[in-house]
Image (cartoon, rainbow, N blue to C red):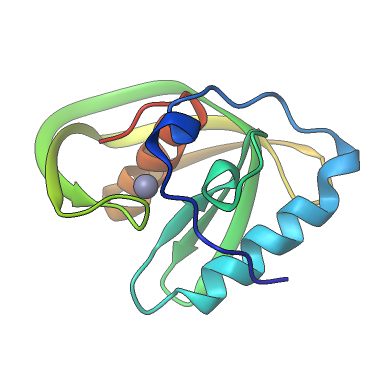
Length: 136
Ligand SMILES: [Zn+2]
């Protein structure tokens, strides 16, 4: 189900809790909501639809995938850039990394480890910041 985007900064600055298999519907709702906003959005965290659970969805071109309880285990190639966010106004400076490695659960709650670079790494870092209650 497509959900409304949360823009309440107090809510968005709270940390999310680990997701469990009871949160499968949240994963579906997050995928639906990103698809509905894909013209202006490349990633989303569950708190952006009002659920403080550690679930993000990432668009890699037309391909959208969820990451549950993601933990960035390695990051290299620090650089400065600017980003915007569906929950915030304007463009803001931030620090990102050219390459990252992530432990996470896939949509079936199976443990995975992935290496990501470039724009995809940037999106994952932005969404993981949301889980930690950090806004750009
Ligand atoms: Zn954002």
